[in-house]
Figure (spheres, rainbow, N blue to C red):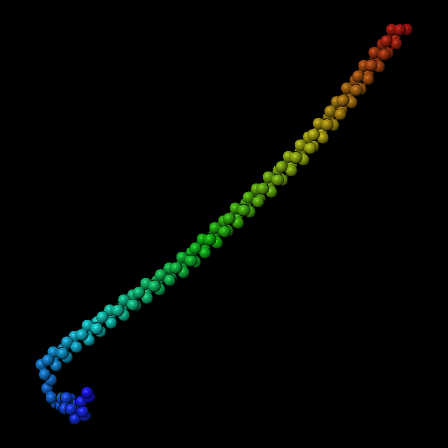
Length: 143
């Protein structure tokens, strides 16, 4: 049941009434609780600020690490590209040298064949000369 208006007004202490001892204790305890709560709120705010700072630092480190990783990857790719170019150059040089050797071998084979042909022609001429000399001698002895 709701107290009547006059009862409710009667429960309100007069403006100049002195608070009771238990009200003083309660007010002191409330003030202490409020002070503790304020300190806790301040502590939580400080912790939240520190956490935000740590998260900000972590994000910056992650960005730096990502940038460094990208830089290192770019460096590795550039080194790989240079190595591939070097290997390609070596391969082309090896092919050029091989082509020179093949050409020299063909030229050598051609010269050898020509020399053998000259040698065979010289042998043929020598044999023919020997045969003719033998025939001439044989014809000369017969007369």
